[in-house]
Length: 442
Ligand SMILES: *Cc1c(COP(=O)(O)O)cnc(C)c1O
Image (cartoon, rainbow, N blue to C red; front, side):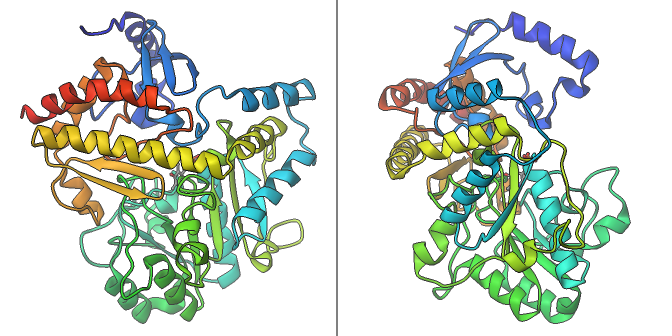
């Protein structure tokens, strides 16, 4: 039985007249899977409700922020209380201080933090600091890593070799793209030879702490040295910086983000990125990003330093209240719950796909995971693109019809929350066999 989507379809028609493609962020348009995106009216815990009254188990979680589940009582109450005291001051307020203290306490390399309004702003600002600190222009990024829609970071890879990147989006100038070099993810030789050739021009390497925007592609250790540590060592030897983008992994991969997985606390290896970026979880569902790092680097920011960076709504009291209330719920028990739900769901999906002979691989970074529709491990963007996206599309629509809302793309992580109880997982388990069958029907 296909759920009725009449009201969502009407809204989508109206939306497309006045909003480009009907959406305010591209993946929401269901472009790669087709069909009508449900227009949502409410959400509670692990469940979403759409305009037609259909209910879905949510595995998107607003792309990460809803780590405690939707409309969490503590978070909603904190925002309501803050709203009663004023929506925005454009002046300092206590919540900003407490939130920065919480991040500094959790994340070793962050000595100082500045709040912004999105992950995009965070990476854009971190790049500016890195270029100012080094007096150099070139930034190195990896193919398949997403750092928001910053002009300089939209560039994708040519294959296999270090190349000057194409801009990656219309409207980005060649001059901007010229200062971005894109390398294949995980390719240490490419990093080493680029630095041998052009080390003196490179301001920073920016990388997702664990790439999760091409699906989850965890950094691999070689001879006991993690990839991120290798990047830090290589950058530092050339006087460049490492920017670790934890907008997605931060406070999700573990209590200390992915740095809790491959930093000193996870592996005993002593290394640190110079700057880090955050978003998603840090705002608990309100628009927040942050960047932070060593005090000498963050000290370059205006007004004390020469690097201009600002924001009318930065440090907004509702946003900091939501972030703080989310952190209050993220104790060790919460990460245990998340880990259990994540593991259980991985197993359920793998079992269902295996039973129908659907080639797949589940990859993880801490409690974060994704499912690739491909038989072999995915190590690079090219690997990720070699998925059977049509099998994913059939799987996606069968899940949606069965009341499970997956990311509408084969290149995204799946998100669970502490509200994904056994009962919720049972609802997903009930839909999986039919969806696996659909995926198998090539
Ligand atoms: C989501 C994301 C961003 C961009 O954050 P926005 O808040 O969407 O601007 C940057 N980096 C990573 C790793 C992300 O996952």
